[in-house]
Image 1 (spheres, helix red, strand yellow):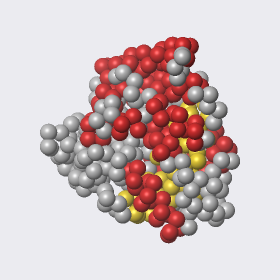
Image 2 (cartoon, rainbow, N blue to C red):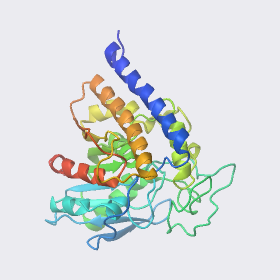
Image 3 (cartoon, one colour):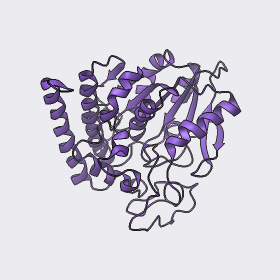
Length: 355
């Protein structure tokens, strides 16, 4: 018996695993602690069409921003997940892009959870701390910036540090049914998409909650987190994006860690028939990217995401999955400009497969 992958697929997957290792080291060594978070500056900011929707949870009250479909329907709902540097004022999709206007114009209700830096939108084992020490609290309350500094104890106290992150429970129970009970939103057959950290999380949520999520999109996601070197790459990224400890999220190489790895749970996505949109850029900049350290950083991050995403593609192909659309643009780095373009390309397919 040739095994799950077969000899050819095993060689191809092995090649991508080796590239993941090399790219992990490339990110870790020259760029130091700056590996986390997307590049680019805000180009949109607060959208007055949205409403603040607060829901109680074990983490305390959590805000989401909700935007209503243009035709007023309550059946078509999509969740937009943020990246590793998620802030507590606005979701990055609102702060850095204008895509919500196009989603609502396509008659989809948009839900943007706010906060959860470095969370992977997962249920963690414990509050994040180091040797019993939590956040320095130097940046004030949890309503402030979650990524105002870098280093071991950077960022404010609050969700994830004073309390344990329980984002999966929040999205699939607390928020889901509050939206149903208060706004009449359909709790089933929804879509979910995200960038980077949020792309990985979108696939995790869809795999384990297929009744809620019929559709999932990942842009520049880390879809092979058990590849050699990836855990340590993520460790450095999470330290930089708010001073979070990956060991509080999940122990290495155990059931909880594999539960979060799209490469591992790929068979569930195939069996569920979840409609997927998977994308990553080449890591090559274009004219919109200026010559800067941020651009070089974003190139390395996108190259790592591309290696992870290609490995996931090989994995799905080995399973004979035909429920995926892949898009690998010839140019594009870890930047909101490219993720916004990807949403625009995805909208027709997502619109046809939710509700």
